[in-house]
Length: 179
Image 1 (cartoon, rainbow, N blue to C red):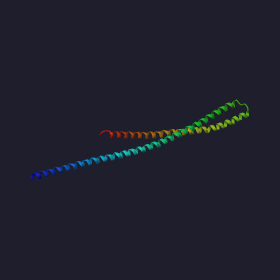
Image 2: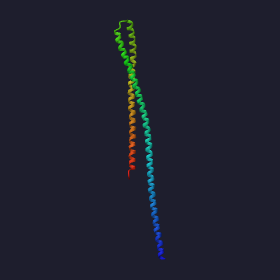
Image 3: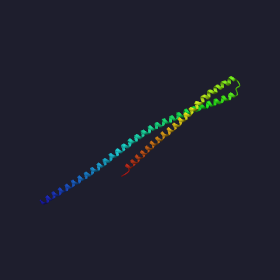
Image 4: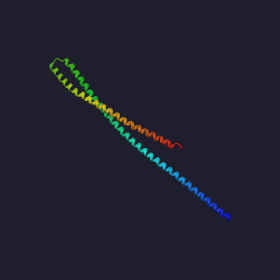
């Protein structure tokens, strides 16, 4: 009987020890899982924020590309209008030169008077044309400056997007490499 009671006590002590070990192992496993879940949550939040930032940056790049395109269009229009004014001035100058040459070779007072009147009108048209050309050149310069500014903004946004892409790529490499 003494033996059976000793055997019963031995079984009782060993089962309590096994229960304590199981509880301790379960607790450690739960802590490890909790730590892993928290890490995954933090990674998910970081990824979500990075994705949102990337979307915002892509949108800003698109908006800036449109602004740059509008600035380039304004520059093209300014150049076109300047070219028109310069062509008009060249034609007026050529017409004046042609009439001045014709005036020297004309002896008829009526023809001479008609040429003088035409010259006066052409010269009157040439003066505002010079002022308009100056205004168009100023406008072209302003548009060139605007295009430079818009392109610089676009370049900066593209650089930011490139840096973000590089950061995300490095982050992905680090997370996928064996620990």
